[in-house]
Amino acid sequence: MNADLNMKVNVLPVYTYNFLHVNDSTINSSDIKIDNFSTPSANSLPNGVELKKDVSFEEAGSIFRKNKDRIMVSTGVPGEPNGDTSGRDDGQALRTGMGIDVDKLMIELGVKTDIFTVSENTKVSEPIILHYDMADGEGSLSAQVVHACKNSEVTVIMDYNSDKDASGFLGVSTRLLAEEGARITLVKTQLLGKEFLHFDDIGAACFDKGEVKLISLELGGKQNWNGCYTNLVGKESAFNCDMGYLCRDDHSLDLNYVADHRGKKTNALMQFKGVLMEEAQKTLRFTIDFKNGSAGSAGDEQEDTLLLSPDVVNRTMPIILCQEEDVDGRHGATIGQLGEDLLFYMQSRGIDEEEAKRIMIKARLESVSRLIPDDELSQKVQYYIQGIV
Picture 1 (cartoon, one colour):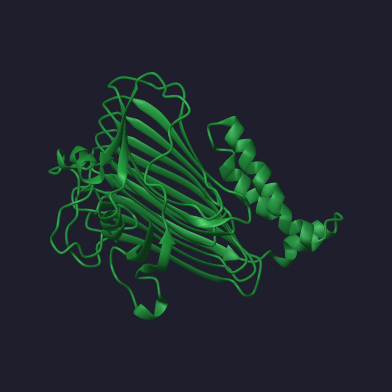
Picture 2: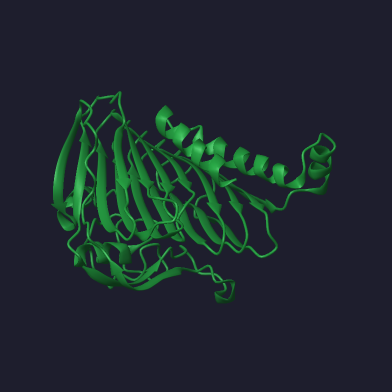
C-alpha cells in the first residue's frame, strides 16, 4: 500500500527560540510505498526468551500500562517529547524519543508488534538477532517490545541493510522494559542505501537497578530520524548510550535523546561521535532531565563531531533540566574541523590531508563499532566504514 507521512517528531522537552530550528522536526513525504508490516524473524530464539508474534500495537502497550503508576506515559502536553496527544492514552503508553505521531502511524496502518520476554533470573547467553535485509524500492514498518523480567539479562541486535544505491522506506519502533535488576543491551546498526528514508524510535523504562545500554550506528540512508527516551524511574537505574554517525552528500540526520531521571541515584551517560561531509545536515537534541525526587543522580552528555566541509550544517542542542538540588549534571560538545597542528603533525610523517581525514573518520566510527557484542556484525560494520572512506 501507499501512504502519506505527515508527522511532527523529535520535540524538545522545553522549547527554545524558533529561529534556531531545533524545537522539533517533521517527516513529510507523500506516496510512500509500504509492503511489509512485521518484524523479521530472529535466526534462532535463545533459551530463556519467549516470543509472542503479531500482537496489535495497542495490545502490546498493556505491558507498560500495567505499570502506569510508575512509568511516565503520554501527557497530552504540547512541548513534551510525545507532542500534543490531545489527552489520549493509546498506543504503547510509554514515551519515546520521536513522539506520539509515530504511535499514531503504527495504529492507523495496523502494524503488528513482536514481544520478546525474558524470564526472571535468566541471563541469556546468545543475542536475539533481527536482520532487516531491505530490497530496492521496498517499504517496511515494524515494532518490537523487549521485556526483561527481574534480574534477567539480554542482548538484542537489529541490523538494517540494503544495497548501497538502493532506495526505500524503513520505520521501526522499539520499546524496552527493564524490571528490577534487569539489563538490556540494544544494538542497532543502520547501513541502508543512499536513497532510503528511515526512522528509528526508541522508548525505555528502568526499575530499581535496571539498566539499558544502547549501541547505535547511523551510517547510511538519505533522510534519517532517530529518537530515544529513557525513563529512569527506579532507584540506581541506569542508561548508557554510545552512538556513531556519518552524514554525507546532501543527506540529513535528526536526533532527539532524553534521559529522564526520576528515581534516586540514577545514572545516565550519553556519548555521540560523528562525521559530517559535503552538504550534510545534522541536528542533535540531547537532554538530561533531573525530576523532583532524583537526589543523588548523575548525568553526562557529550558529543564529538568532525566537520569535513564548509558546506555542512550542524545543530547541537545539549540541555540540562533540573528540579532537584543534589544531582551532578554535565554536558559538552566538541565540534570543528581538523586542526592545523594535527594536519602538520601528520604531514610531517608522510600522511597527506585526505589520508588524515580517512584516519580520523575511521577512528571515530570504529571506536563505536568495536563495542558491538557480536564479532561478525562488528567486522561487517568496520568493513562498511572502510569502504566509504
